[in-house]
Image (tube, rainbow over all chains, first blue to last red; front, side, top):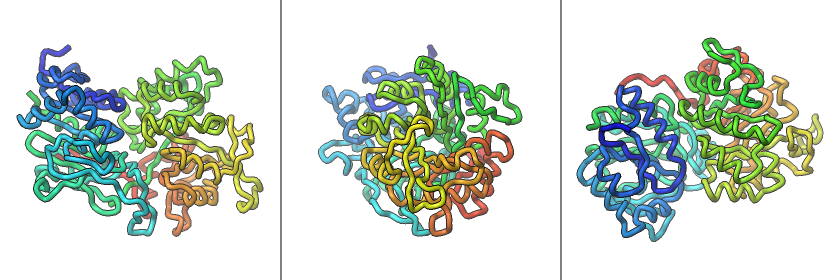
Length: 224
Length: 269
């Protein structure tokens, strides 16, 4: 156990968190920081004491939103308060998507609404410039192009990251300022957003080899 | 800018040891799957696959320990297959840290397993492995049969009908091995690869027969350019023997116009 405030991987009960934990520990070691600071938690109290939240998640938007709003929404409130205070947050995959308001995938489910916009599905039957069929889910390694120098500082310039998803975030006009990175799959889609100490990405840094560990190192660097 | 074609080295593991020795420089223990996986990770593999060929189901814990230790330090997707029979097997392998489980014989005997796993973990967690053999070696028009139990059992299924069925049931990917070509070094059965790529919507991993870099390129080049059109190329011997590094393979593919990941990650942040 570390004496420093923990880096909490938020457990909403969706999927395996261990790969995210392991990659975060590797990033902390590489930065000369204490790997014991990483822990998984699902109770709002533990989230309030966190130096940083990491929200992973694979699966369905609806399941994630439901889990966050369960029990009177205590978890959603804790995560929302953390973000509202501009404390460090890293969203991965569903941890990006739930920052938006709604998803095509789950009609009635509400996200956290940190950003205006919705989550949409890739169209079936897309083709690329060579006339080859593009597949859904978008699975494999693809490049993330940062929108500016501030984004490049943590995303790198055209680094390759590992993606597995069928849905992507579509910010509305009012939230377009959050876009930090874009990726091409039958057209550009938003693959990373940022606002203050909040970063969120559609890809999986924990599965993206050196590029992914580099991103996690940039996230933990300078944490209180 | 588009999703890259993937290069996947495959390690055969028996009782916790790599069967066909990996001849890399700088390996501490060429028979240790964790060491080999780490070396492939450093060399720029896009994914790593373990195929467990341990005969005894009782030795499962050894494999799970290998998976767990690999996942501790390898940060690319890890697929584990071989002898996966039940939902409990799948749960244990994913819990140990694998990202995908590959099922073969058990998908044929129990197709419900495909739906159950895809439903619980999502399609991306499930690879359906298919061993196909030509009904007539000289005539692809005669089709391909599906074989299980390491090629010993003819299921009587037609490979194209079966891939359509597993795609429908929820396979996230199809790992397609040509029994005719496996171990020959003569290259993928491109007619088989093309037929399957055109039959299904999910990604296809070509396997069996790679003996040269040209073979890898042909597997993943577009069908319109004479390739197989697969999304990923899996190979064992060509990488294990150290004749070619993954870096050389990637450079070759890039020169042939294939989009591949550039793993050179400059310290620009």
